[in-house]
Image (cartoon, rainbow, N blue to C red; front, side, top):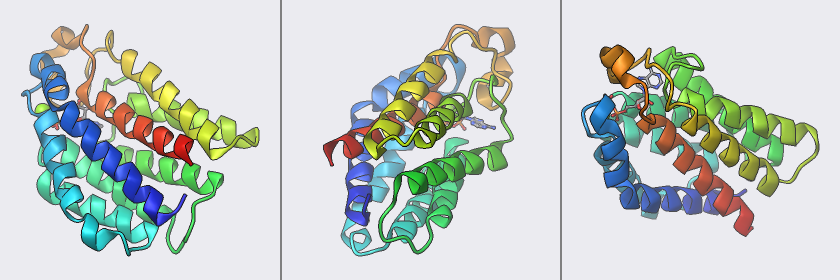
Length: 209
Ligand code: ADP
Ligand code: MG
């Protein structure tokens, strides 16, 4: 995976978040404040606007640019969470010209590590962590079996989708949804959904290679 593939990935995320703005905001309506879609779309539109300067950057600098852009434009809980995730993902692949399968897994690990460092959520608390944790486990398992980047990212995306669906019966413990206590049960977490979208986009870019 090269720095041009990172741009392809980010471009796909920007497209998908634009297409799913309403959907993500709808998910954030019963258990939040109906802004997750607009927050994420604002952030990735700002990232998209920086592509002309980002194409020449190395991978770590690209990911760190995404991080700082999200922190300064997204707002809400998800801005600092995804911002820290991309900043740490960048640090994890510092000075790499091309990402191998194990670099990609290290990047995902750092991404999730940024979210948990910032938000302190654990699995089962109805957040993006519930999509990203099974995704990382699946990716690691595939890596250990010598799978290709395409297979690693496809399995990670599939596990994130399962994890996202598994948030529906969960009681929210972290974030705005936790204010609803029992009434948070029965709704899919918006952040877990945007995390799945990002991983699905990664798998799509890696499948195209
Ligand atoms: P806000 O809740 O401030 O309106 P968003 O609507 O953009 O921000 O994002 C909400 C999402 O943020 C939730 O669906 C959840 O996945 C995620 N989230 C909230 N708090 C945490 C946390 N402490 N750790 C991980 N994810 C969190
Ligand atoms: Mg919200």
